[in-house]
Length: 180
Image (cartoon, rainbow, N blue to C red):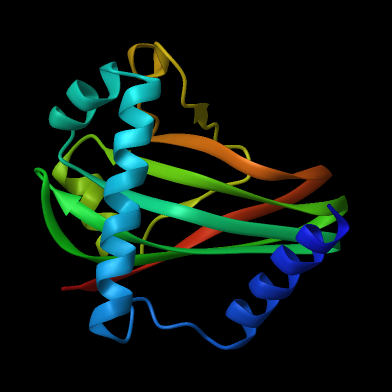
């Protein structure tokens, strides 16, 4: 368990300090990310069958198959994903997060962001949108999509993968978009 926490924190720190490119740099990495995105969507739709209809009615969505998060007082997170408009792939995105406060541990999760209207997706693509610390995310489980509500044109779903994190921190998520 300790090794896993250090691995998550170490990988995250390496990713954040390396100034990761938004899009994967090789065809193999792009294919791997695409497969991970598809697997993540399938998993989420199995956990909540209503999610498929929810996304069909959205203007677009971004899928981040794995976001690694770690902290010892100061924390950070990073993940890479794909963005879709009306179900069609349009580009890549990355997510980064910085936090400060009482926090310790490491975890990973998947994140899905649905955009209700074209203006919300456009703000995301133009880098004018960030997820604030007080935004709420819905955990993916049966009925989550039916209960989800858009706030400022977006709805956020998360699916924990593993790890353990204790935190009382302040921070937010920032996103970068790169067209295909």
